[in-house]
Image (tube, rainbow, N blue to C red; front, side, top):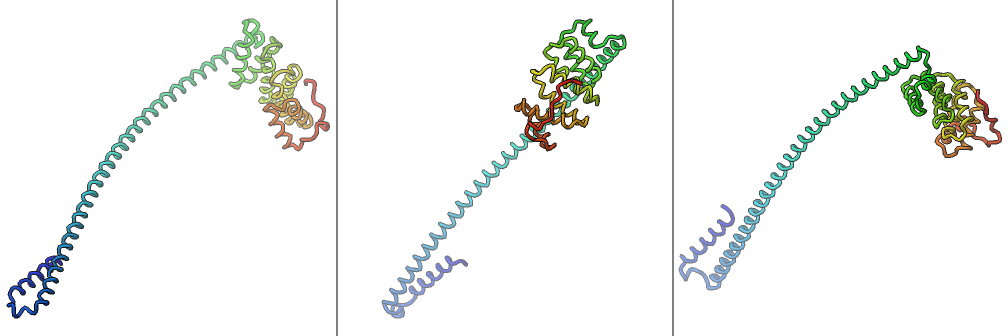
Length: 286
């Protein structure tokens, strides 16, 4: 039995008792009035309790309804997000598969192209070897076939980058001999020096770099030739000449890339001293 029921029971009992008692036994008038006042107070409290109880129940019911609605909205949002993520994941997988397929196809094409280039290079080397065995050197080939200076240089450079260094040296030499005033003559001599350096033909490399410096002093590759000659000189244990070339780069070509490299090398060698102490530079070819 809850409190509401208990209060109602008490009120009913009191009302029945007052009705049953005779007027003579009901006590004084004041007592009756007091009892009536208490009954009215109890009834009022009962009404207020009932009202408060109903309001709280209604509030809880409204809160439960709101929470239920919010949970439903959250559930719908989560479902939509899950569906969107699944869709994006599937799209990403599809794109990934497509990209992999494209990359595999590109890889096959690159491999085919590499095979073709290798085959063409081999054929070219065979033709050049046949021409050489017939006594047709690079110079004679260019003269007899009427190759342009640019074509001859490009042919020599192609052999150079492919690693056919001996053949490239012959062709670059033919270019310099045939077109000593050509636009790429200094470049050809520089490549001759580089090829000989790679073949460990240090004297020939030194001579080629020196020719660049002496015969083409205005060429843009002079700082490069000086730096490469210094490297060869160090390999030949000519330290003083190497220091002279490195300092020459710093003094005459301070803005060249080789100047920064030369400063670093001089610092490593402990040779960053005033120019007056620098040994005389090499001025003649070997």
